[in-house]
Image (spheres, each protein chain N blue to C red):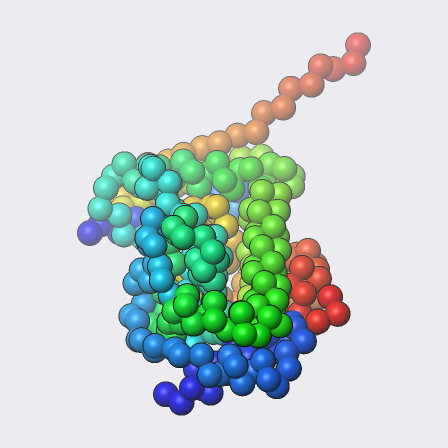
Length: 243
Length: 79
């Protein structure tokens, strides 16, 4: 795979949310990246591990999760192409949660050493990635509000709309439909409800003519009602350097 | 692995579960049913959409377990 293709989604995404210069883009494209294919539902980095590389999603979907002593799992975030979900491992030595693939994925591994060298050589790139992890934290704040305060249909609507806005930034939304490759069970784990309750919510949204979620793909029928239900304000995604 | 269907009733309105789910452990089915009932009840009781939730679990067509949750609010009547 040519190096430019490996970083296409990353550059597209960073261009949307940050002031990225041509020089910064060249430096990112020049990073040594080891590309590896993963099957669906494989652990990339496990809670407690000491990674020496960061993982860039070149293609596919990943998720971060944490499993409590009783064995129950909370999905913390969903990740798409162009994101580096374990960028924090550059400064936080031991992983405090799991990173795994959701679908078959092409992943690119960048050594911590190479990232550090780039940060030192081009401080602007360091600041761009710093901003990126801050946006990641803003998304977690929204996730907490979502699972803590909203009723289940609004939780699902919010997660769906957020995912769509992020996919849009990398050009992965076609018309009114896009991928959301989570099973009913996984949607439950993301929203803090059971798989059966998740199924009931999905059915209700279909019955109400708002959207259809089937075989890992969302098709929106009623944009107005979806946005109303989602209680979504895109400011926290900071998808512009001015935000 | 046996397949279980979780039919839901909210104030008698039936939301059938055609697809169903596989469970290897009966205890997991019981937990899923109770949690689902409690979780749906939380939403519909708060929104006022319903005051009774039933999760009717069937193993294929045979009744397996039924969880019923009713909202009961008592307010003193003014004398």
